[in-house]
Amino acid sequence: MATIERRNQRTHLDAATTAPQTTPATAPRTTAGPARYAWAAARIAIGWVFLWAFLDKTFGFGFATPAAKAWINGGSPTTGFLKGTADNTFGGLFNTLAGQPWVDWLFMTGLAGIGTALILGIGMRIAATTGTLLLLLMWAAELPLTTNPLMDEHIVYAIVLIGLTLTGAGTTLGLGTTWTNTTLVRRLPILK
Image (tube, rainbow, N blue to C red; front, side):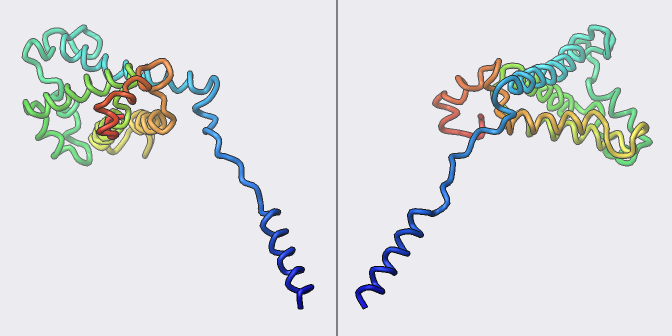
């Protein structure tokens, strides 16, 4: 009987010592090496797209917005785009929003905030969430699309914004690490 017990103990010990070994998880390859610089460049580039739209609509530099229609000269930054959607799928909804002061302020604040956050690499969660929402609303305003039945640059930018946040792109060539270590962000992690 003692022999059987010793054999069982030995089998139990052998099983415990030969358990599969696990290795620690490694960081995704997209956040290491040269790829992190590509994500940082994408972050800064898309941030500039948002910030430039804000600046051009505010001051009317003549690229997409002529000086006479600049926000500082009494123009509405949402009227041109939203009025042009009248015949689209959701045209009625977006057409009624065109030129409303609260919509103009919300839109312009969004462009400035999202652009600044992306360029600096701070507040990436909020910037990606609000940027994605803004881009999806602009996509919906243009339905049906004329060059592709489903996909356009708004969807592509939204996907990239999500990728920027998931890969921690604000920490490379940005202030993301410093921002994350502030007392405010440690207290309110949604601000990362």
